[in-house]
Image (cartoon, rainbow, N blue to C red; front, side, top):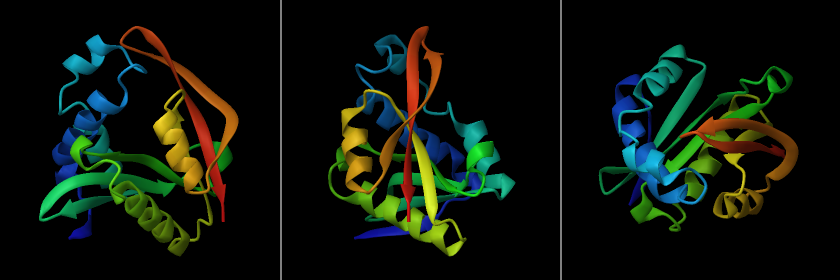
Length: 167
């Protein structure tokens, strides 16, 4: 049975572990293998802890048979031009539970909670070239925009593209 629980700052290591396991599989071919192969499970602990302690971002952890299998971080938009929007900051699943509808349920629950907080429009960033993410977000009513942020990971160029959903 799938349930959700609110993420707390003390869940930062658990959430970071889910991120790292997901990244190592999902981003092969998009991010340098040498970077993914050395990516520590604890990499995001400080960021996640800070996000959840701030009270500006919230998290949900998907629990399947009392085991954490996925998470979503969401809240008020962090980009100045989108400050009145909700933002899906991250959505990751353990590789062994991908394509079972858990990501869809996490996304829809986060959107429901954002709407309760008055955010009827929301956005997210996804790595450019990630066909699975593109299909997933489009299936859920998000539209890809022309907005793009370029950066480097592992010494290689990577870019995120913005997706938006109104309503």
